Length: 358
Ligand code: ACO
Image (tube, rainbow, N blue to C red; front, side, top):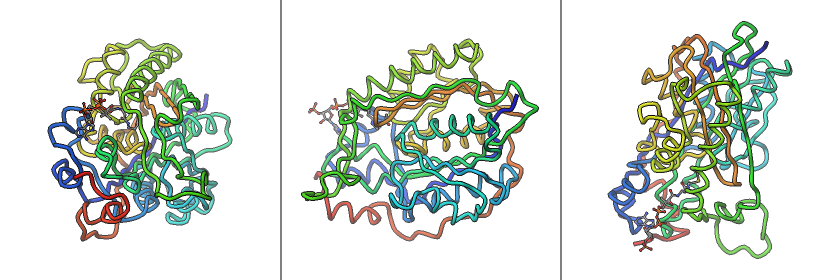
């Protein structure tokens, strides 16, 4: 049986840090409110394009896997904040890393995008259609931050994570053992960025920003992530005791805690890094994979449950058994260009357009 195994991993987070105390200067909020209601202490703001973050994360993942750019036959970029709608982010990344033999396509399932892409790659590998796939989850959500709206502007950040998934014929019980992806488009207006595409183009007057019914998103996220995780475990023939680590989408620490309680998983089996990056949508899970490996929380054969929920609504879960290797084969020296601006300086354009909340 052919399986898709994650053999390389890399992240790229931009250097400029936007702290909760920075936010106190541009919107009516406090470090205490943000920390207790969301678990977020700081987030990163990018001085480069989302495709630049993606390309560096991809270079690092390729080095970790010992794979050259020409070896890739598919690039999947999960994002809802591409540099441009045309051409796709995946083709821009393809050009930046020189992956001349790869097909590229973007996948927008908002915060669930990485898991939609992982299941797509897995199925394409299982059918034999693809052999070596690069998946990038990347966002530049700072583009849409509106500090006159304190309920959304404190939540989001920028970043990218990438994995290489490779076909393996000799690891029958490894890789993605079971997955679920789902959507409910009737709830689309509860979390959206109106006019971020072509709608209403004849009479638009403002630049797009987030609209969100936070409490409804919260409720549905806990239920969807918890229930889907339970179902994939059942499909994989696993019990809760078999789970070594839950890596959930990082939207709000209270959502993560409630999901873990719904699943009856103890806190030490739940990976949380939201304090450092906020919600980076499709990038949260691949960044968390990299950091969980660095922290030694993933070992050869570890059983991991991935779970995500996002705009659409979309949700996804996967039961994944890690392969044999948890060390990178090599380390890439790829780096972002230097940045000499503070996070607030990088956000001056947002403030000029939307104003502040103070
Ligand atoms: N600072 C200070 N006060 C605030 C802030 C802020 N940044 N934002 C809202 N408040 C105030 C509100 O105005 C309200 O004040 P009031 O009682 O005087 O009217 C009070 O805090 C409570 O507001 P709620 O919206 O009820 O706060 P809640 O506890 O629901 O937390 C939050 C809001 C953090 C957005 C929460 O609902 C949430 O996390 N929802 C999930 C949404 C999410 O994570 N979205 C990210 C994208 S979707 C995804 O990735 C799953």
